[in-house]
Structures are given as C-alpha cells and as structure tokens.
Length: 114
Image (cartoon, rainbow, N blue to C red; front, side):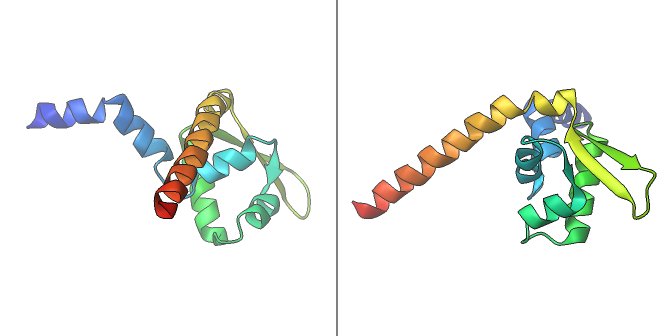
C-alpha cells in the first residue's frame, strides 16, 4: 500500500491538481497573466473572494513558485505580485483551458436547446 501512495504522489496529474486545484488558483493566475498587480487590484478583479482567501491563495501559489511577491519599503506598504518564469509557462495551458471552457459552454448550451 505504501508503494501505491508513493506512485500516486509522484503522478504528474496529482502534482498539477495539488498546485492549481484550489478554487481560485486558476483565476488568480489568469489575472496575473496580464501583468504585475497589487493586492488591491487583484481584490477588485475578484470581488467574490474575501481578502483572507486571496491572501491564502497568493501564499499558496508563491509557495509553489508560480508567483513572486515584491514588497517595497514604503508607507503605506506596497506589495506587487507577478508570475515567475514557471508561472508564465502555465499561460499557454491556461489559454487552452479557457478555450475548452468556451467550447464546453457552447456544447452545454446546444444540448439545452435541443
């Protein structure tokens, strides 16, 4: 049984699910794909997410090295978030997921009409 767990944890699909499987991960990456943003800007782009949830999501993505956090020594504090190199490598995949989402919505819409 121990070997099965190790095989599962070494599975690339499991790795992807672990990293971007959070409720808001893909949306945060999508917005950061447009460029560097401050916390308040991200918060305004996703008003359905509480600030504490956004903070947790940003820390999670930073922990996986998909985003970087830059703190400026200013008062009030200025913090910017941007994609890292590995985070930018996810953008073409995100574009494909976005297209799949559009295709899916159209298919479901067609099924409901029929």
